[in-house]
Length: 259
Image 1 (tube, rainbow, N blue to C red):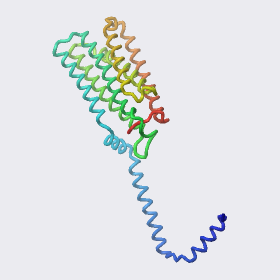
Image 2 (image 1 turned 60 degrees about the vertical axis):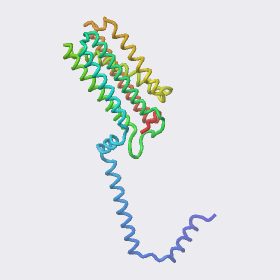
Image 3 (image 1 turned 45 degrees about the vertical axis):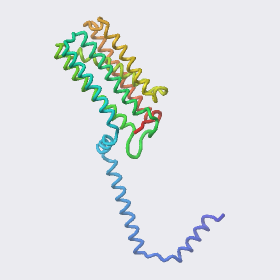
Image 4 (image 1 turned 120 degrees about the vertical axis):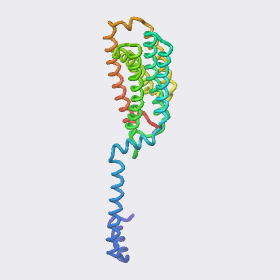
C-alpha cells in the first residue's frame, strides 16, 4: 500500500503533463459559482415562504376527508331542520343536538384516523412537507368544519326553540369534547392505531353514553349548569393534552403518517 504522500507525488507528476488553459479554468470556476448560487437561490425561495408551503400542502393533500366531514355535518344540520319541520319538543331537540354533536366529533376523528392508519410514510418531516404541519392542518380544517356546524346548530336551536344560547352551547360542547377525547385516545393507542374500525367503535360507544345521559331529566336542571361548565372546561383541558401528546409522538416517529 502506498502512503498518501506517495500518491500526492504521483498526482503532481501526472499533472505536469496535463495542459490547462488558465482562462478556461477561470471561466469554468465562475460558471460553477453562478450555477451554485442559482440552485441555492431557487431552493431558498421554495422553502422560505411558510404560506407557500401551506398552500402546497393544501393543493396536494387528500381533500376527500374534508368533503366527507362536511357532508356528514350537512346531514346533521338537515336532521335539525327536519326536527323543526315536524315540531319536535324542547327535550327531544336537546337530546338530538347532544347526540349529533357527539356523532360529529366521532366521525371527524374516525376520518382523521385514516391519516395515520396505513403505516407508510415519513417520521418527523421530509424535504417537502412536515408531518406535524400536515397533521395539524388536517385537524384544524376538520375542527373548523365541526365548529361551524355546532355554531349553526346552537344558533338555530336557540332561536327556533327560544332557548338560552349559552346553555345549548354547553350541552353540545360537552358531548363533542367527550367523544373527540375518547376517539383520539383510542387512535393514539398502539394496538388501535392501525385499525380505524376500533376508532369508529369508540365513537359509537361514546354516542351511546351520551344518549343514555341525555335521557336523564336531572341533567337539564338549572342547578346542574355549574357541573356542565366544569365538565366542559375539563374536556377542553384533556383534549389539549391529547393533541400535544399526539404531536410529540409524531415528532419522535412513534406515529407514522401517510402523506
